[in-house]
Image 1 (tube, rainbow, N blue to C red):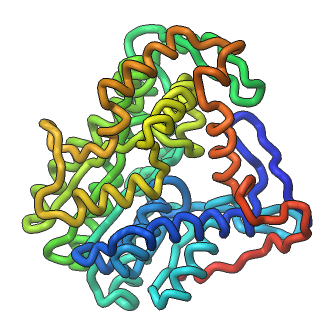
Image 2: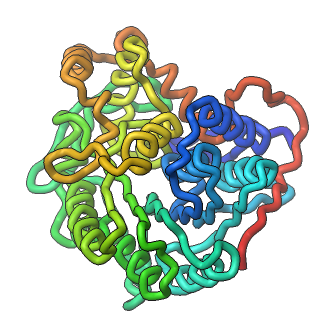
Length: 395
């Protein structure tokens, strides 16, 4: 078939296999161009490994540290008439490159929240990875979660807490700047969002791995978070997602205490274009303005550049860079005073008419399409392609 992008809001319903593979090769080539991280982990479990920061968290340890990696994701396989999801094709591209480099790379496709998945992963660590992992990356982004103990299903939401929120937003389909008003979440919505996006499952994973004795004594685990500027706080930091991130940090402290010689961190990362961030009101407009300024200053990073810096400066270091709350801050360049001052100035002036002057909306659109393998140099998008791409899935 000939595969073209079909977008609807923050969703693209098609993905290009060769485009995703080429995008992965570009990220791998970047990592290979950087200094090796010889002190990095060698056996890595990535929970949520097929897109965004989770995908980069496989690429970096594999190609900077020479690590064997085991990934978990929930992605759609292709049929003869429909493409697979982008995460499936990303993983196929990563798998091919890893195996060419002589690195172990296997994956589970299924519900990472389930006890069954935890048991399968533990058995694979024992049988395939020498019985221990020395790094666990937790990067799940899901709109819902089934509690493995009770069977209850929880759904997350993106809402402010305590008051109605009105601010600028961007209709990415039409390129229109408009206002959005979001009503506050009720207590049940807050609680459900914490259940889905908080730290409970991360802690359950670490407890299960520890109980099965498959964690190295010096294991490092990290989960990802975001804070952002004050203009986004009502819908993010101070909203339902923020409540979940507070829970995540509490879980981190408990995990760190239980690990003994091991370490647990929350890493606050930079705003990037991902499927998750594209769904958050206000954030795509902020990202478009931010990217213009950071690119002009030569300090812009995508997911893989950001995760390489996270490993190089903190996860592979005996002295990671922490803030007063004990979090790793890889959003330090984004949150520089000069960057945020320029972003705030543009934010107060932004309109549909000057969108392309004051922001990098064109770059945002290009980054969004690249998530699905479109717009990558060297790919013939007019050529027929086979959508079927097998993966070496663990059972």
